[in-house]
Each structure stands twice: as C-alpha cells, then as structure tokens.
Length: 351
Image: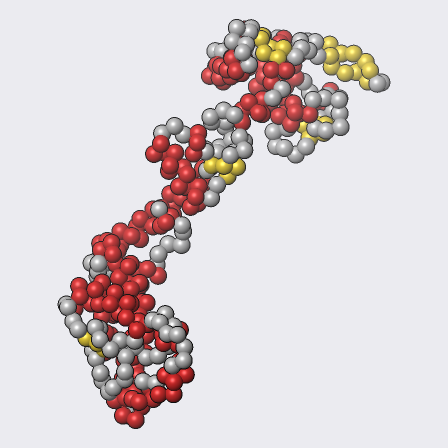
C-alpha cells in the first residue's frame, strides 16, 4: 500500500492550516479531508489572484471557484509537468524541458509553446514567459484556424472550397470570427446542407415527372409567361361568354366610344395605362382569341411571347385559340404550380 501523505500545518488566524510546500502537497490535496480546508469556494473577482487564471479554473463559469474545480485543475496541470514541483516555483517562466511530452496533450502544449516562441522570433528559447503570452488572444485570432469554430472563406486556400464557404455564408448567414472577419460555423453549415438536401429532393421530384417540367429547364419561364397574361385572357373569354349569354353585352363590354374619346387627347403609346385596362380584343359571342391580329397594343408583346414559348410547343403554330383550348392549356401547368407551391423556403435555390 502507498504510504499516506505527510502533511505539515501552521497556525494562523487562530486555527491550524495546511502548508503547501511542494508539488506532492498539491497532488495529495484530493485525499485531504475537506473539513481541514480553510475555504471550499471563492469568487473569481475581488481577491488578490489573477482573474484570468481563476476564470480557467471556474469550469462551469458561475463566478465561483470551488474545491472540486481546484482539484481538477491541479490534476490536469500536474499531469503535464515532468515534476509537480514546477507548480510551486512561483515564477512567471516555464522551462520547455519541464513539460511532460509523453502524453498527446503534453506534446500539443509543447508544440504550441514552440509555435508561439517562433512567431515572436524566439525559436531557440528554452522557456516561455507570461509576457510571451500577453497578447495571446491577438496571436490566436490571427491564426488561419484559431479554434473559435468559425471558418472564413479567405482562410481556405482551395478556390472551390473557399467559394463554397462564401456561398454558404451568403445564403444561410454568417458568424463573427475572432479575427474580425465573418465566416460560417457548424450550425450554419448543418442548416445549409439540410436546406440544400431539401431543395435537391424537391427539384428531383420535378425532374422525374415530365408532367411537372413540361419545358425542362425553361418550365419556370414558360409558366411565368402564361401567368403574365392569364388574368387578362380569362377576362376576355368571360366577356365573350357574357356576350353569348346576352348579345346586348358585346358592345359595352368592348368599351364605348366615350371611353376612347377620353383618351383621344392623350399622347398614346402601348405603355399607356388606360390602354392596358381595355379588353384584350373586341368582344363577340364565343369569339376565339386571335394571337396575331386585333390584340390590344398594350398586350401584344406578352401575347406574342405566350404564342412562341407556350402555345406553339404544346398546341402547334396556331393563329387563334378558343376558350376550351385556353382552359386546357393552363390546366397543363397545374402540376407545375402545385410543385412550385411545395418549394422549400430557403435561399439555397439562389445558387
């Protein structure tokens, strides 16, 4: 059995206190009955002790350093030193030779110390000091990967991957980096790829169904071309149906001479708003819509686009279209409209 640690005590303030003389005393604290401790906690501020050190020991960040946190810190620091006596030297210098590099963490700390010294122009130094660490936050912030969990596009040397990071930041948001730049973190990356998968799955549904993407990659343009005139064409055929219902309706539904008289004094063009509000063509009972002549000048260009982009591919080179053909035509876009309504709400599609 290991012999119990021998403690030394001194008397101060009217009671006996444990005397910590060497590293062995510190390492044995875990076995000392805490009834013999002077205090079991202290605040991280308002006492004569380095606040940054207390913050590191305060593992739960509650502003109090407690006995269990002190013991964890001692165990961690002691394992990284070849001799635990290095913990009680009371110096602001650490010999590199004192670092225990037999463990992976010890090797990392030794490598970090040498990297810092090299950056300060002290590659041959045998020790690192507190002064060397004075601007450690600035030093770490300037590293290509500074450990804050944020990756910036300019930190990535691969051009394609750097562009991907920039794309993710543009569509899914960004996070501030210690360097002052902005980049992406794990949460942003996860959200982007979840959105990208949802968008990809949604688009694949359209590609797999010819009834959805009637015009392939140009389906969205074709649908927009149809939507641009749908309300106006619906209005035209409804007026013609009213004229079929009552022939007296044809004349007023085509607009009266007085309506034209009101705009006769204006300087007119196809973009004149008053003209656009007139019917698409003159109204007659059950009259087909001519696609090439007698069309309201304000709508000629849009009707011509509809004829070339939608009607010709689906119905052939028609000069006019009936109400039944029109109803059948836009019904063929129902699947596309339903698919579009299910489009995932994200900015990923912009890519």
